[in-house]
Length: 503
Image 1 (cartoon, helix red, strand yellow):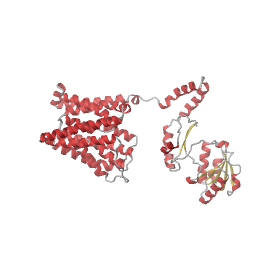
Image 2 (cartoon, rainbow, N blue to C red):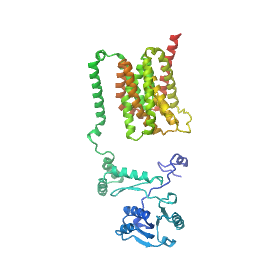
Image 3 (cartoon, rainbow, N blue to C red):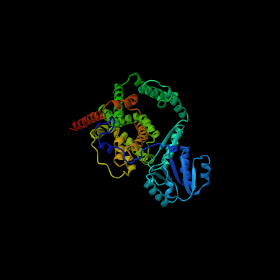
Image 4 (cartoon, rainbow, N blue to C red):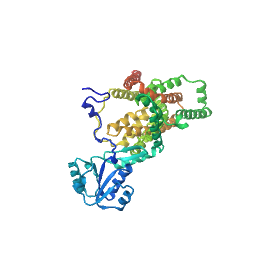
């Protein structure tokens, strides 16, 4: 048997597809068919209006004991529509192609359906999806362009909302474009391939419309705004912090190390969607930074990136605001408390370092598990103690330099929450957590190790526009394995060095 290109060659492939909606969309030429509408009250009027709005030349016979004045008023402009003011009987199905049952008598509607099927005809029964052979979808029309929307009978309200969105989003001038395309089609010469190329070239403007100046240059506008912000902060520090002036004159090599590290770690995070905190924390400890200063550097550098990510998820409607309200307050309290405690222990950083190293060692193992798809069994019920989860996640994230996503996002998804809405909610929450924990660290520590902070901010900012492209070029699994191993080695080194000092 010959298998056509791009066609499934076994039935197993169908098991991977959505089977819930069995509807096959078609556009019926009602002007070529004979239609029977049973019922002429409010329900019948609704069906009749839908038919004539889409097919003004439809040949319709209406059968009803009582006919509303609105129906008479509507058909006054359609002489091909006939009315039989009588009770329905099976003879009304003679010389009919398609049937609409729109009475307010459910028993009668079921009887009509039964005799209609005996005649081999298709029927639509108003407000009874289970009795319908076909549905009337919500229609969006712009001249000759017609779009039908169906929810498989589940929610006409959703269909109407989508109709409203498309009606507002599609310009009325689209029909003029269709007419121009029709005229252009008649003038094209050459073979089929040449005609297709020409039409594709002409219609490219539909998917790539002319954008405003801001839309065309949004990337550069963001960069200019970011540079102005950094410049303003730098100018302020130059006039208020003598140490900052010294730094610019005699730049500490630590700045360059963290500049490169911030760039690389942001690229990795963009490629696999995680690990910025744990990689930066491990690197910072290896470079001799106290845990509090390392966490401060991480959180300050994350404020802008998480703000942008949270805004994008908000614009795409990926934020569960009910979940956000439950999560955010405990998370902020936990983050501020974690930042305060870690800053208070700055003098005991030699003892705190191994604890943080053990934590990053654990997260390195988590990254390896994710790389090889080693997952815990999902819970059967949604996680309920979201406030407690937010508090613990915020506290650990601030106290150990990272882990908000690893703890909170993974717990929400494992607890039955929708992955997309969980991601959007966690991202926008992270912005507030990073901002307030950064303020706490800065208040407690001041400008300590700000060369590392500035290096991370600039490095991660430069990497941001490149990260998305990197994610499409490099194997995420390869990166995750490499990152997991490196983090575990660096963390293990810190633990071993602490043990050797004790010995």
